[in-house]
Image (cartoon, rainbow over all chains, first blue to last red; front, side, top):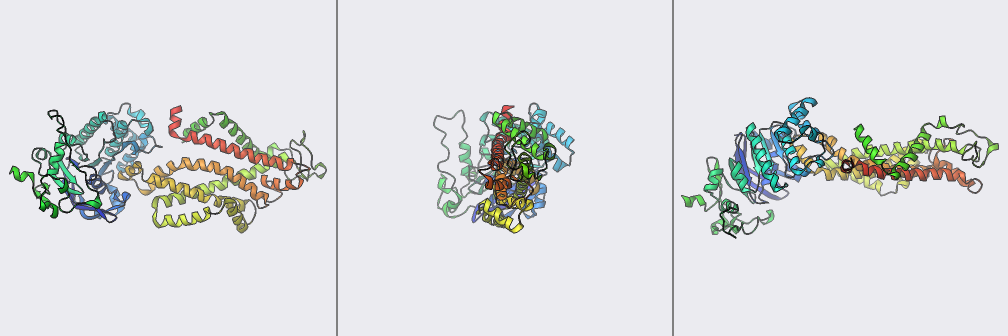
Length: 319
Length: 283
């Protein structure tokens, strides 16, 4: 096991927007983290990359173990040694992820120099090679360009190259393509998956696009309102979702054979942290909700690596 | 860095206004630096028989009440004015960057301590602050320099602090941190360089203000002490001769005004040229 997140809770001020998160990632695995906006996907990413202090949050319970080391127990300095070198991070918005005043190449070079100890010349050669792998045309010229001269898709390729530069074992990608044109989204996401597979790097990909999950991921963790709804193998998840929320998300994927008007979405919205309902947090929107759901928090039932938290699991009915 | 500065300069000199302003500044700087070589007289040479001469071939701008050549004194005065204001602003910029960066980046108690002190000095007008400081340190070049430096410190600390605070939450800082960059690396490689453009522009404009402040202190007799000429000091001695020889007060006054205007125009041109985006678009 490369990364093990165990009953992780995150608090910001008095609120606890993330509670009891549990899932793991094996070496070379692509794990999708899905859920609507506000379900805690990005917070999970920030917790794993150690960036919670930036938004004033902290891990209040649980552990994040990386190859057996609990990252939450490390000093900031020890923690930093993991960033870039063992864990790469791809931010949500490539438009602002690069320093506007520095040439692209310098910003990527510095990662190899810092983490792999390469001399400047070798670092640049490596940067150009990474750009080539990211299918950036004229990589030498791009290395000399400034960020504003690049398109969004191009910038995201650079950002991915930066994350790859430190030869990490895990890359955390926080909705790496949401800020991009639909046409380049698929390109970039497949490129990322391909590079990660070639290098046997594990990828934790945050997305709300279930079709991307179906195409690229090995495993999926579904989050809802700061808790785990379901963690499962991707095939099992799509074939037999356990949680009604997972079912609802799958039903939100448009299919060509759908009747006009059949695509409904999930009524309602994810509640804000202050308005989390009692019991199962999904109950106000759940078609299967009963009184039990309104009062009792469903336990996270674990079966091997899979788990789900629902009083009326769909899988029980499948039997 | 050097070719970057050169190309900024090239764009800044692209406009007519920018060129005229730069030309005047160049004249003043050359006059200041090479004053001993360019002037036929000593700045303190008194020839009482030649007092109150109007402008002529031997005295281009005439002479003052002691028969000293005004042109010579004006050029030596440029030395005092320019060096005092430039060094003073350099002092406030570098200290302001350090204090502002620390306050803005680390926040918390350090930030509050620095902000309180800075806001306190900010609440005084610069001239009042400078007067108080000169009174404490004592009149003269060093006193004026330190006084002006401290008077503008608040402005640069606040500017740097604000810039750093807003940059700190930028995605590229988050990205750098996620890739393992340390606080000092982020400050030195990302935050300070991104703060530099607005700080340098403000510094340029503040230098103009500092020249006026230096002249004001000189006018009150608190600046460079006689016989060392300064533009403010010359104007001060000229007040007594306002009707007899208006040139004594007029020429240094003009020098101050033109230099400050030139600095402002050239500063504006630099602002436009320094923006990486606009430069690339024009290139």
